[in-house]
Length: 249
Image 1 (cartoon, rainbow, N blue to C red):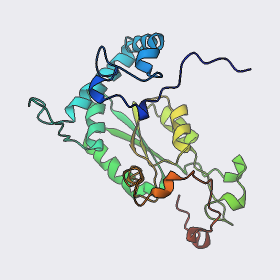
Image 2: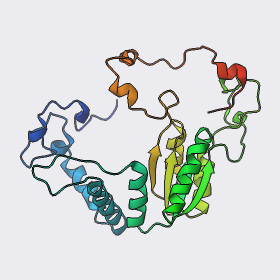
Image 3: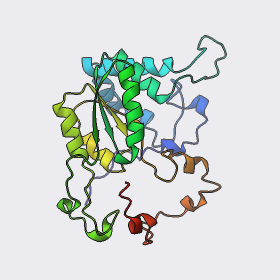
Image 4: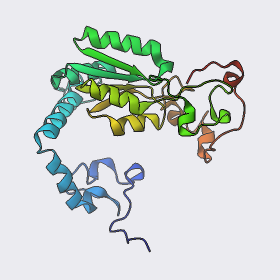
């Protein structure tokens, strides 16, 4: 038999407690039965102790300073949040705060044009840039057991995305900080697991929405009502890309 669970699962995403009286916001606030603020005291102490380590403490400090720096007119009372900086500006500012000089730009080949612009922005802000695209190494998909039916372009000699190689390249180049741009689901996970340096995400892959994955969330009750049903692993439909052999991933 499995080990009996000590706590109920945290359910912060569906917490019904009013924001102004939640335990995560008020010293004597309330929370549901699985509230991690109320039920995971020992684990919280363990997590907080990590911030006392010099490297983690410095990183967390600058991240919090950067968070506040992204809002304007903070002197006003009552304060209404006024965001003033884009994600790319925030990345540049944070890297400067941390005195990082050598950045890794790890990107999907489908965002090559965007990667070139990001590279220019980073260099204009005084950083050295090491960039590695997902197809670097040209490792055949057959290495991991991919059959022709599961290739993007069937009947071709198709290279696999190689996030482990991308991680090893930037590790060898001793980057101070890595920026992830548009890697596929799962490929990004592999990069994050193998990368030595801290990594931030500039954008994630979402082919349908122009890499704006929150669009279906905002339209959940309208155009994306289909998400209310369980997702299927595959439609079994042939795409035009298969027929044309576009090679875009």
